[in-house]
Image (cartoon, rainbow over all chains, first blue to last red; front, side):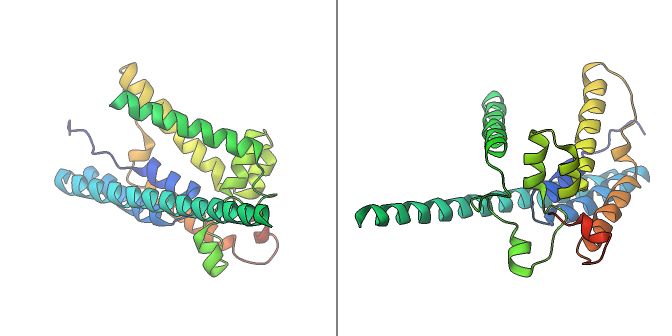
Length: 90
Length: 132
């Protein structure tokens, strides 16, 4: 087996799980385990497709968390701005 | 383009570090809250990470553990992976990365799931795992 294992995105998935609040990373970890086990039995194609799935889940978890946080920030600062403006007008 | 990307990451990281250094998440409502906790009241495996970041940036390591025990695991795995990849690519070493062992993801997944269940139990000593 001189072929290199496809990237399993385990580190990224775990960071998404622990540091973003969405449990999307857990799906990433499951696919990461498939990358490792399929590569270990010599199924390179299967490992590659699991790698792609792991990347997909990890990326979506990341994007959704970022979107959620950005939207919340806009809401908070938007409301804060409106409140400040209305106080200033009185 | 790649340089630009790394610069972007660096800039975002710097802003986040400054933000979490100066503003304590426990004392303000301006930080976004975990969507799972807000909707269901259940702590997820990531709850407490923002407060843990604040504690870490002030070198209160006990505080990090109190907020989220797995924070340490995340940092350990990240550092381990970076060191092994660095040695293998830059210094042409052939160190086996245990993150590519078939059993590792399952063990980590079980740790995270057990932690998730235990920190939601309202009984001592499990309630120590919940963020404070």
